[in-house]
Image (cartoon, rainbow, N blue to C red):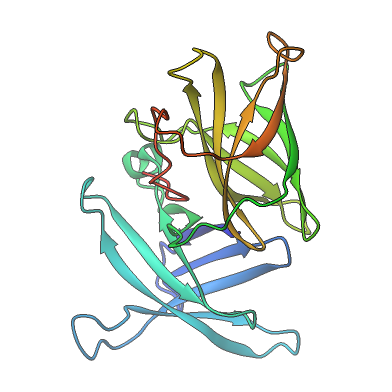
Length: 242
């Protein structure tokens, strides 16, 4: 559950990139400082931040990478702020690349595992504008309010239709998952398939309408059941194609 921004410094500075990284627990200013590479696989940067005492500390490392399918450059980071290591990527939108702004968006890396749905409650409601949804998902261990925002990065049919966002303590949007519009091959009814990164792990659920809800704006969130009829798979997980 991480998000943020990263900007390449135009003028020569100690840090080649500066930015912010957000989660539901923190908002931290970070910097990427070039380091000497000992081998081809060695990190290109140290990721640093300033702690509560005002001391600059190294909190991770980062690598310059190139997308296998797009050929677009991005930055892969491994960071630990005291809660255990996590991985994120910093990618550029098409508009940012064309404008040469040096602005990147920090997004979660694809997660390796999916938790079992268990007992889940939730609801999704279509908003009146902006082709967005508001919703919540909860069990006995967590309770998340979230928004579904249209995915401007979508260029292929398999890419997510929406990104799922929650807010950090300072109100910064954090991407915690992806959602796809889908249609049941059996009933022909439309539903929303969601992959959400919860505090307990990745969770797959569907937002469906019962007979009373059909034609309205409200969907009920239910555990995902793999019936073999999904037309769009959530294999992309939390990845965001730039």
